[in-house]
Amino acid sequence: MVLIAISFVTTSAFAESPIEISVSSDNIRALDTVLITGKITGLSEYKPLKLTVTDPDGIVVYYPTAVIEDNGEFKRLLQPTIPSFKTGTYTITASHEETEMVAQAQFTVTPQEIPRNQLEESIQEPVIIEEEAITPSGIKLLADAIDGSDTINIVGTTTFGNSDITLVVSSPTGNIVTIAQVTPKVDGSFEVEIKTGGAMWKEDGAYTITANQGTISENKESISVEIKDGVVVPEFGVIASLVLVVSVFAIIIFSTKSRLSILSRY
Image (cartoon, rainbow, N blue to C red):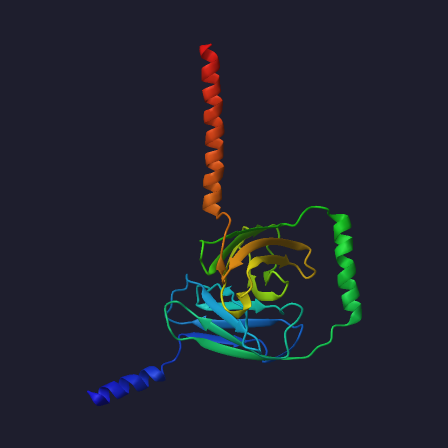
């Protein structure tokens, strides 16, 4: 029995992960992008793969998902954080809810100076776009959470489905708390789950969630979420808001009918 137990533990310890992951380049510059590719074996393909990207300081900067194709393969383009990747080694961890095993890949970032001409062009471009189109942002955001929850569910739509959306969460004092990235679906809808709590969420007050889309952020929208003691304090959730609107309309209709009934009697 002891030998069987030892054999089982040894086999489990050296069992291969059903998840494979790799990056397009082990060394990149601060403004480069990284293509994450991989494959799963023996896991459900209809369930998304979760990717956790940790910067050189050990802080999670991205928490995206990757859609798995019919052949088990997946890919995800990782764009630089704002304003660029930090110098050092980033770690990407891939996980799936059907297994406790994970797979990891790393890439190292080397410094890169942003040319001044590029900065000047990026500042001038939004002015041209504003002159050509005065339409409001094509992104619509909505935040919902249960009172006291440590999870904020962000749902929204965009009229531009050809590029990823970057969500930046800022504290009441303006410090960046976390960054998330999501790829819109074919119909332009998207959904992101943001976890609160920890040292980065110690301030009480209104946290701003800003969605940026496009290389020059011509598509941008912001919303605020109230946080206290690291958890959500929503004024009204989505369901509560709908119930409130329906109730108000019902009261107005009932009052109108009552007045008409009284007038008809006299």
